[in-house]
Image 1 (cartoon, rainbow, N blue to C red):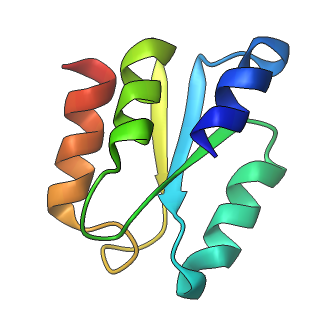
Image 2 (cartoon, helix red, strand yellow; image 1 turned 45 degrees about the vertical axis):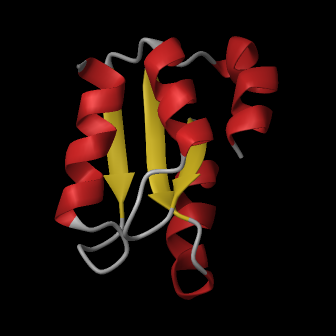
Image 3 (tube, rainbow, N blue to C red; image 1 turned 90 degrees about the vertical axis):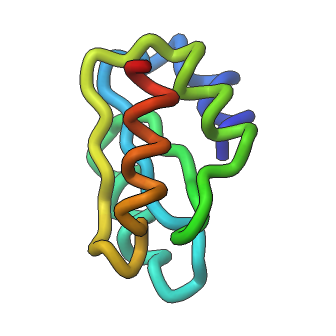
Length: 87
């Protein structure tokens, strides 16, 4: 998802980025995130993948939205998302 976001982010912009769990149980969150017309990248519920963190650092987003509950994206992962995007 991060590689697709890199390839197509220039078309729709990366000022708003949606992060959502890529776990099978949370695919509805991921589909919804993509449907709102924003760049969407995936995370694991319990850890932020390096490729996603790298994308967030480079995107220089104004806003990052996280789709899903704390079961889909843990509080620790949420903190890592913020650190990667804005830290």
